[in-house]
Amino acid sequence: MSFEIPSLSRRNLIRTGSAGLLTAVAAPAIIGVANAATGPALPGPSPLDTGKVEGGKVEFPNWRGEADRPSPAPPAPLPPDQRVGFAIVGLGRLSLEQILPAFAECKKARAVALVSGSPEKAKLVAAQHGISDSAVYDYQDFDRIADNPQIQAVYVVLPNGMHREYVTRAAKAGKHVLCEKPMANNSAEARDMIAACDQAGVKLMIAYRCQYEPYNRETIQRMRSGELGAARFIEATNTQVMGPADQWRFKKALAGGGALPDIGLYCLNTARAITGEEPVEVFARIFNPDGDPRYREVEETIGFMLRFPSGTIANCSSSYGAHESKDLRVRAEKGWINLENAFAYEGQELRVAHREGKAESIERLRLPQRNQFALEIDHMATCVKENRVPHTPGQEGLQDHIVMEALYESARTMAPVSLAAVGELDATRGPEPRQEG
Ligand code: NDP
Image 1 (cartoon, rainbow, N blue to C red):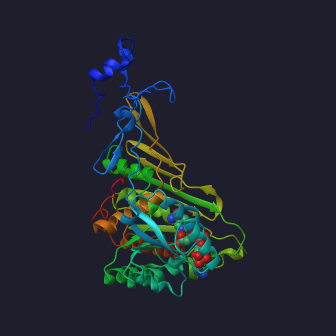
Image 2 (image 1 turned 90 degrees about the vertical axis):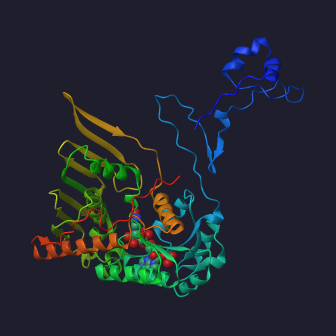
């Protein structure tokens, strides 16, 4: 695409006069007409100022010099009636703090319905997000979503132990499903959910937001490119401190487990995504503080190790009792990658080290800021619109449950547990997501 500075027309040459010629050559033509009311004529816009419409998108030429990064292209959202309509199920913190606000940055998706057991909250949230009262459902009348053609997909954001029921009911209503992580409470539930969606002919995607987040994707791509050689160690940490109050995360029936499925899952899923392999041997130890009633049913702290067939070892740490820390390190043959805040909603910092002649080079990357929830939701919308397999389908969630069950077995028996070898790379993933425009 090229933009040209317009040549100076005879009319403009006359209007600018000889004194203005130099300015007129460097800058665009003056198109305003001076009069008493508006004052002197102002220069008209150049193509650099106005941009142009190409392929249904507004595009601006790069206004920066070669030395600087070009500014990102303006978002090109589809008109609302062409976007995939989502019903959000469960109006908890994640829905209200991250997911509903992220729809404002989505280009292919919009929130058209809510499902909640709290009518007053649902009414208020619907009004805040321009969702009509008639598109607010409760858990009893959830199945009526089948009659709402605006709803094409359902985003299940409920406690983990409720995922199976609502994914299955959404599939029966003929809706595609995006389901929060962890997929379910265990692998048996995950298999049921995959079968229900297959049977109904709808798509199922698990919301592994980090696999759509630009810094995590850069890390995966750098390791897959081979530029740093093979990964020897992956070190992943996801810790936070839980408050004393009672909540569903401490109840096994609703949570499936403690720190492991809630936050340790990011360490596991990321190690699998970096290598593209599946672990063949795992080992785990669990710690629960004595007498703490919160950890009667679920674990507070877990340390675990994954051994991948190519030799990469992942050391992972997760806890509900250690100050917030969400970092990733990859130590490879020819360099290392540090990704600070790898699993956080924002604040990622990526450093890559390798030898540069006599020196050690440490590169610090700043990528364009993107909302990872919007990227993830738009990916699901693309899959619905283009009938594609999601990058993180139900099988990706099931595989994490299979590995987590092996980790719990290892912690219980205090011995390593072997897992069946999976020959193929990325066996549980769909095609790479495209960068959504
Ligand atoms: P919250 O506790 O904040 O909210 C859960 C909501 O679920 C409640 O507000 C309620 O909504 C509804 N609900 C219905 N029945 C129950 C029940 N029996 N007990 C508790 N809540 C119930 O949870 P989160 O929003 O933090 O988590 C929801 C899901 O999202 C989980 O699967 C979690 O793992 C996942 N998650 C993912 C994150 C990510 O980064 N991808 C981050 C945080 C969570 P209502 O009143 O509308 O019925």
